[in-house]
Image (cartoon, rainbow, N blue to C red; front, side):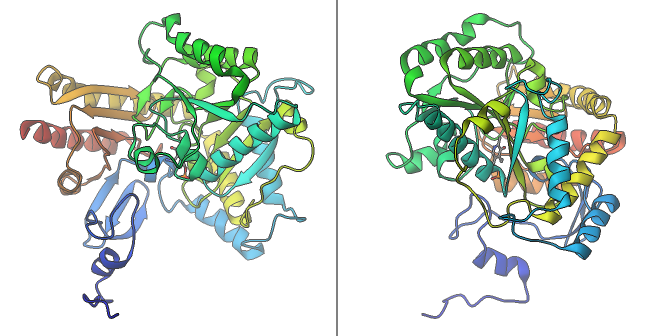
Amino acid sequence: MMNPHPSDTHDPIRWDREHLWHPYTSAVAPLPVYGVRRCEGVRIELEDGRRLIDGMSSWWCAVHGYNHPRLNAAVERQLAEMSHVMFGGLTHRPAVELGQKLLAMVPGSKLSDGDPQKPEFVFFADSGSVAVEVAMKMALQWQQAQGHLQKREFITIRGGYHGDTWHAMSVCDPEGGMHALWQGRLAVQHFVPRPPVSFHEAWNPEALQPVREAFEQLGDRLAGFILEPVVQGAGGMWFYHPEYLRGVAQLCREYGILLVADEIATGFGRTGRLFACEWAGVVPDILCVGKALTGGYMTMAAVVATARVARGIDGPFMHGPTFMGNPLACAVANESLAMLAEMNLPERIRGIEAILTEELAPLRELIPAGAVRDVRVLGAIGVVEMARPVEMARIQAAFVQEGIWIRPFGRLIYTMPPYVIDEADLRALCRALVRVVRAEAACR
Ligand code: PMP
């Protein structure tokens, strides 16, 4: 049948609206999208010429800003050699270098050789969700190889988010839309409450009681505990106490449950430590990284396993994506990691944290009146939690009008700017955000 609404192929925004799905949108009634012409540094330039200060780092990725000459050059150098070659039976320097760099920087890298908890093996995946699938498979295969045939289920904390593929969805917050939609079809996993003690509160060991009870009851069936260390991202932007993570790691050891740390969002400095596990001095059994790994240039993720896990899987590990270890992605990741190593990352993140804290503080005044529920900052992440969900299309337009790119979800308005943002841009970003939130609060 002919399309009843023939598309105008000369109007890309209109064609997009009629034929392209965007994240979490409907084909029938999509939210508006803005055309982007180019990006440079922390600026996103729209097709109509407006230039927005980027407050999202393209969902935690573009930590060095856009169109960076060093990252561009790394891609171009690699392009001249090969953009891709299969990883089955072949290898290449960019992959080896990236493996070496990762193993030298992840939590536990300073443990002595021969320590079973030392990270030893890297699996390159093609996206964060796939890395989570790989990590979960790894945990299952390891338990099976140990003869723990009953240990086939996972436990996690409420308020988490681990991706959109099948098993990643099964460990996302069960109250979220995805679970509701797939009820009865997703693998059934186990959930403990969201860690009740926030990052900045005094620690209370009672917070671990639900984990202890769950392990007591289910320990024999649990292969792994998957969590986002210290910062829960897309499931609620919640910062919890590092002691909770330390306690979970300890309990996992006692009950023979593998700890899978999903640092896809938190990795590479975002929380103020290179990896969020460092806040608790925890070395996970399996670690997932992604997002900022390539500085936001292309899709790539990695799963790092300790010696105990990697060597404990007898026989092949059964996964092997077509674009595994893509040389272009490895090359740009190597350059991005070199740039992170050269910048004084902790100091830079502390600087961003101080400005976010200062500039967002005025929004705390709106808490008593009820429109804003909480304002919180950790590292280079600033969050304004509203009392009610925002109206996306309207608030998005308001941010663009103010010259900033902020993409809220639900009740959460948040920013995680590129690490390279300068003070003037960061203050301008925050002040525009504050104006929009104030207007939003006033019209409720
Ligand atoms: N885990 C976490 C903690 C994430 O934040 C995300 C992405 N938002 C994912 C997994 C999934 O990554 P991807 O979108 O690359 O599949």
